[in-house]
Length: 227
Image (cartoon, rainbow, N blue to C red):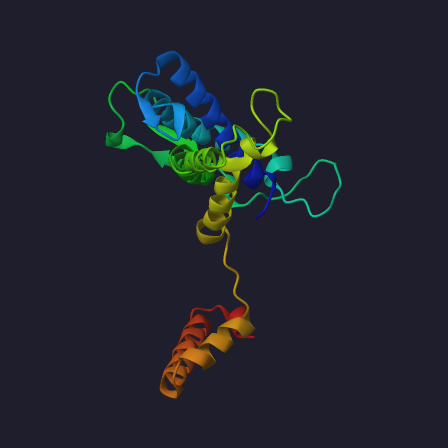
């Protein structure tokens, strides 16, 4: 389900990672990270990694509570939305049991399934997406320019702020299509696959198995399914 959440979470994680990397690098930075970006520090990279993953887990829970973020908007209206956000945004019960140490106060928690996916976004935003910035730094250095633009004083232009966002946007789309978006198959599409990929004997076997399954449904007093 495409909604505002699918844009806000990945984009926010890039901003959080960028800010955390700067703060940790500024106050604790000692070890250079990469020659293409002399100001980057390992301390900033690791601090931002931890901060972004924790923020992703918590931010997914906060955003998932608001239907105007989780409901799909199909027009340009600005009113409030109300819908069934689907199972990804409905809290599920998790029993920690022996996994939790004795000092941990909670043995049972309620978490949204979307929070587990948010960890993947946080990890990508921390490890892979910053390399979009490193690539942009190398590109600018090759052409002996400091920034792509000057519309934002001290930070360059819009393009300088969007290098990591573009990498993150591609990942967010692929991840959503692969692991989150439900795959709806029509009867025509399934029949087409059967005719294309199964031999006559396999099609006949499938027909007999489907007939047997429907017969068992009728025997189980599910007469409505047989009408």
